[in-house]
Length: 327
Image (tube, rainbow, N blue to C red):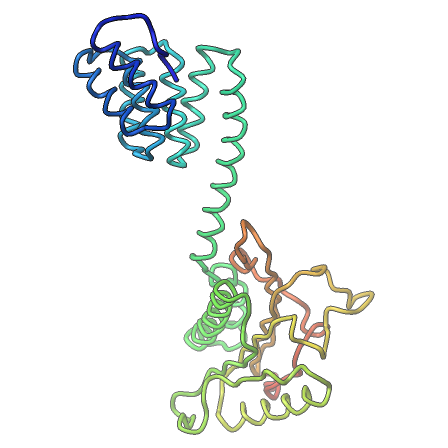
């Protein structure tokens, strides 16, 4: 405690000494009350505010503790203890950058204080970790795939020669990937499925739905072939304009397109994640969305940019749509 028991006989000093005894005994509420009484008698005594700040800190009354610490600094700006108190309160508030600043000021007044030096080192690490955790949460909650797929938008407009159609298909792809990323962030998995962009004029929506579950598709070459045959017929009968498959790498027993040598060699190591394969008569694409754990939270690299793969090497499903005739 700052300001231990003394020989003074003034009423405020006596109250302070009683407060110190209560503090040492862990009776922080009684200590704070005694310091308050002392302050009423000696309102310009920095030690009293410092001691009450320590009591309030133990009671987790952080706003009151900070106010007392700041009053301590104001009354006695050359005293390191005031800045130390302020740093401790700000640390408890998890306002690490401000706490570091307060401790650095305390260290300027007493460069030999090893306790303060240790606090600065530890809080600097905590501040970095907190910032990274906030960055991770920001990336998890602000998924914007569209800005990372500008080249696809341009390619679609070129292939279709129609900006409106290209934009419609582009929005479809972006929505599918963003939905998958959000599912992955929330649950750590995605349901294997194929989303279809149906024709508003031609599709019988009573018969054909925009999402087809393919959870058995990758169990064996046989189920894979049966699924592909079904999807190709579905695309034709439903007058779909495009399709987007989503499947987690972990559920794919066949085809394990990440295994191969030479030009087929997988360049993303053992990353967990999921595939997104885009299919249309005019264009085919495939991406892999790697996933990592950061600060105990699942984070998809698609928050930055999905990894574009060579569909000729890494296709998860064969071509679903008949290839558009060359112009």
